[in-house]
Image 1: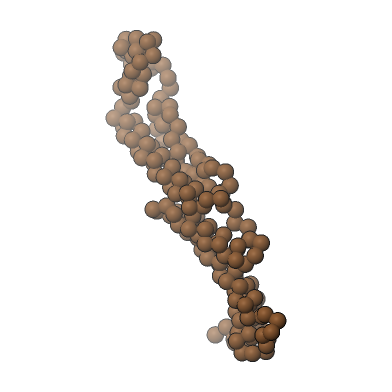
Image 2: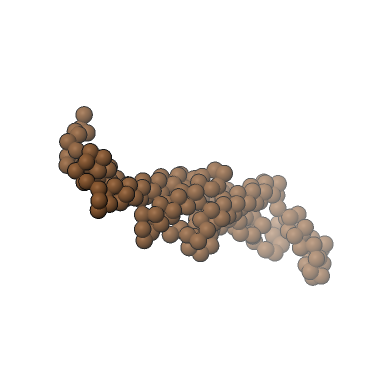
Amino acid sequence: MQIGATPPVLPGPRPDAPADTTRASAEASGTARSAGESRQLSEEQRAQVQTLKARDREVRAHEAAHMAAAGGLARGGANYSYETGPDNRRYAVGGEVSIDASPGKSPEETLQKAQTIRAAAQAPAKPSQQDLAVAASAGQMAAKARAELTTQRFSAPDDDRSSPQARAVESYAQVARGDTSERALGGIDLSA
């Protein structure tokens, strides 16, 4: 998202601006540069810089929350998109954190990963729509892992697969995997 449409102020004196000898001498000595630059900005530009600074802090805190909650599932650091302000500084106005969302080697590991992904997606104070979509996807991943765990528990070699409980568990597992056939639903018609 782009904030503001004011073009950046180019370094150096503007042709229509009076000479600023204080700034020139401060630059020559290497001191008070930021004070000189802030004097060149109009009130509107200073307000835009303050807005960009606030957005930068918000974006960095948002992505830091994702990183902290994701732990080892985060792939690298946060990636930011920037906007250059009227003071010629870059401000973060958007960001993202890549997270490993592949299934685990076992249903238990997949369930743990799904819970971590969901926590990471919901970690910021104000989750974005993308964050909420990732959290929902992680919820589906967790549901499938739970269904697999339940199937494994009820399909031990000494269990009777024809028992009502075993059939119900198998039907639930098939539906969780996306199978909505009549066989998987145990004869239940969902078209109504």
